[in-house]
Structures are given as structure tokens and as C-alpha cells.
Image (cartoon, rainbow, N blue to C red; front, top):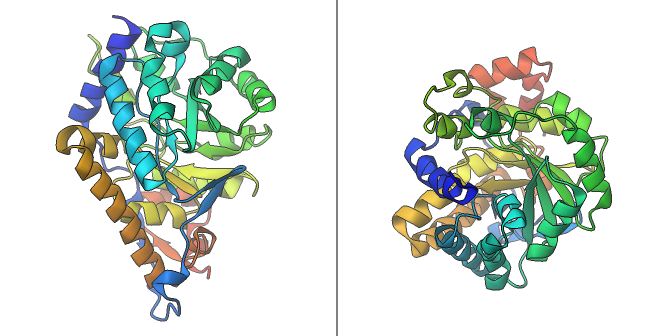
Length: 351
């Protein structure tokens, strides 16, 4: 099977396997504010990732590309949505286009449709500096995502088995690239140990890519003769991973939440737990492919409206103020954070 065929197959499996809703967000209860003392027009949802200012904390996260005309059409529609609504957008891994020039248009269409937008390139940690620079140049990108997908590669029948030197390559890319660099997990969560290690490199942000969304282990297992079922439930939930990342990372290192985020309340909780921005992928892809482009625009518009309504109810005028909203954490997420030494009860007493 070619890399291009595999890209198209991933889309179909992503839609059929769905999202598990094991993100941990259902364990997060927000403490109500009876006296918000602000007006809806007082608040701003602007945020920063590295040197980039985003008009919204919600962005279209890495999904696809490199799978021929089918993935080109998807990226075209997503780029138009990003342009119309002022969102940042990341593309899927560009390695296929670096190795096969025929596939480059499936990515370039994003910049063509959104010439003034904020676009993030994407490459794996196996890439060289030259390949990373090629990915950025291909899109005239404003930032680069370096994705970590060890579990997917191990579960993939034709996947990589050698991950040595990844940290050193990330460090060199972060030092050499002319744009901000973001390291992103792909569905299994970043631990405090990983974030602590990455904090020693000049990254702009880490994207936790937590467990509970599109499960690439399950997708690859669906393609195997002998499934590695032990990987299907492997990982750190998105909610727990946000806390691990935010409480470990130095203040200058921004935290991005992604992994199974499905509605505005998930977005709000992710921001309250410490995220500076929130990436949505599988949920938006499903709406686009099953309900159409207009439904996608409506959904994202309503996400923004709902987020602002809830921020007003909490008396918060900015993303930074959301980081101080008290929450009560229960269930598996409380237990995880407690035994990992993060004192979840502290989050219920802040103001």
C-alpha cells in the first residue's frame, strides 16, 4: 500500500472508529460565579502562541493531506472555513509531499485558499532540518508542528520501529527554523516527564494531543491481521494531560489542548485547566464530510458564541482570566492527578 492510499484509508477509519469520549472533561465541574460583574461586550477571546496572535483560541488542527484529490478537497474546504472565520489552521504530516512532489498541491491549496491566514506546517520527529524547512516553505507557514506518534507507528503494519534521536532532532529543528515550533502528541497525551524534557528546547508551545479523541492505535489495528489491542486504551486523557503540561512547563511555553474536543464546554474546560489554545480535528472533519461545508461554518460560529456566553457567565474577560477559574475535579481524572502529585484540590480554591 502506498503512503497516499494509507492517508485516504486513515480518513475512513477515523470516521468509522469515532471518538471515545474518554477525555476526562466530564470529570471537570466549573464553580459557578453568581456576580460576574462584566458585560458580554467586555471580553476578548484573542490569545497568543509564541509570537503569533490568534483571534480565537479555537483552531483547525492537523488532519490530512498527501492522499490525492480527496485530501486536497478536504484541505481546501477547511482552509476556506479558516479564512471566513479567522481561524489558524494546521495541515497533516507533509512527509508524503516532501517525498512525492505530486502530493504537494494537497497541502499548498491551504495557502492558496487562505493567503493571509495563520497556517502551521507539520512534520514528524523523524524529519531532518532540511525537510522541516521544506515543509514550512511549501505553505509559507507561520509555524511548524512536529508530531509525536510512536504508538501509531508501532501499531501500523508498515510503521517505524526506530525512534532514537527524536529529541535531538526536535532540538535542532527548534533552534534552526525561522518560525515558532510546536511539538504535538497525536492522541496519547503528553506527560510531565515529556514536557519537562521538551522545556529545555526553544519551543513556542506543546500540544498535549490527549487520549479520548481519534484513536490512531484503533485505526491501525483495524488494518492489521493481528491487532495490538493493548494499545487501544493506551494514553493520558486530554484533561489530565493539560494539567500535567501546564503545571510542568515554564510560563513562556504555551500549552495547546487537543484530543477529542467536541463542543464549546470542552473548549472552555480545556482553557480553564490551563490551555492557551484548543485544536479541533476529528469532530470538524466528521461535520464537513457528513453534513457539508455550511454546517461546518455554522458549528464553528456557534462554538465561538457559546464560548463567549460562558466566559461572560464566569466574569472572565480574557483567556488569561479563565486560567484562574476554580474547578472541582472528580473521578478518574482526580485520582490520576492526585497520585501524580498535582494536588487537584488546589484548582478548586483558586480565584
